[in-house]
Amino acid sequence: MQRQHSDEFDRWNARQELAEAMIPLIGGLYRNHGVVTSIHGRRLINQSPVGVLKAHRFARQLTESELPIEETMPVMLALSAMPLNPASIDLAKLVNRFREVGGTLSEFLAAELAPVLKNGTETKPTGADVVLYGFGRIGRLLARILIAHAGNGEGLRLRAIVVRRGSDNDLIKRASLLRRDSVHGPFEGTISVDTDANTILANGTLIQVIYSNDPATIDYTEYGISDAIVVDNTGRWRDEEGLNQHLKSQGVKRVLLTAPGKGGIKNIVYGLNHDTISDSDTILSAASCTTNAISPVLKAINDMYGIEHGHVETVHSYTNDQNLTDNFHSGDRRGRSAPMNMVITETGAAKAVAKAVPELAGLLTGSAIRVPTPNVSMAILNLNLATETTREEVNRYLRGLSLDSTLQQQIDFIDSPEVVSSDFIGSHRAGIVDGLATISSGKNLVLYVWYDNEFGYTSQVVRVIEHMAQTHPHVIPERAAVGA
Image (tube, rainbow, N blue to C red):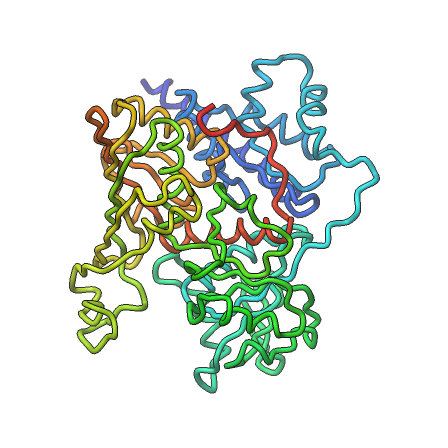
């Protein structure tokens, strides 16, 4: 037993040493080439050695065996020596394919990475300037993600935030809220403030803070900002007339709303209908957190089994719109204390699904309950199907989509008997199917979908911005289609 203990400890140290050696390779690929490495969708950038090993261990979800870091390290070394354009590269899938194909690693990688190999004729990517109009919960998380994704500076560039001045030391307070978060923890990096220039410097990203009450009167070109995508996080305007005010400002090209849009505004759920975005679309919506969480799962179920009717019950964490203590509120029931009550309220998420998945129009109803948790929500999908199925079959299907499909960034899957809502804080997936809670009886199916209504949704917003700016990296290897 003593010998076995010693062998396991030595093996752990050897693997940790490989993980430590892999970290500068991961960072170099990202900073120098804009290459994002992952293992079955779990990003390796900014991970600790233990985090890298945990990502390798996650591979057991697919193959029932841990992905050996001894096999991914040679791939990382080879990638680091290749002339690559920006890309999103899944190491686990490359290793699995190499096992199947065989041959030499260099020849295999040359063939697999052909779409992203530099050939000397490329033009340098221009990236895109991004302005955050509003700096609340979603705005600050957007800032964190954009700063973390700065990479080699050729993608999205966070240039400015626009807020109304709240106090004499407003800038200090804004920076402090970016630095500290009661739900998502401290900012990973350094932040400094220049009160004379009204700027925040975060991990090398210089952010201009602009004070304004009128979106139509700002001249962004004064700050060197041009053709910017303005992300409106305020929710103050949701129709074209209101959001069009941003387009009257100098230096603005397009507008993205982080709330459901009204009228003819396209509501985009990345992974489902982002391909409908055209160059002529100057005002877009990233829909709601709940719509992003449930639409991919509903689309997948409808494609495989058909949905004849369904009801969506949302169990949602309280938001800033509710009162901390009982007080007047223009909305029904929302005036009652959010941290003390479950509050029945309305949701338009079920109807909004139809904007991303048109074939589900008129087939879904919905309601919502706000509950006393600060973040992470759940959607309960009670569906009547056109085709009978079983719990095992549905779980196998959704688990497969979460690991290798075009919806891999949107759908996650878990079957642990011990998870609770706080375990999903920081999830970058739109929704996480709880496999152990799945109920199936003939044509009736009940699914429970967790979602970080802050970080998971914000990750979807960033994907939409990347698509608008045409900076989303090429995916290697290509993902299988839904249901394939």
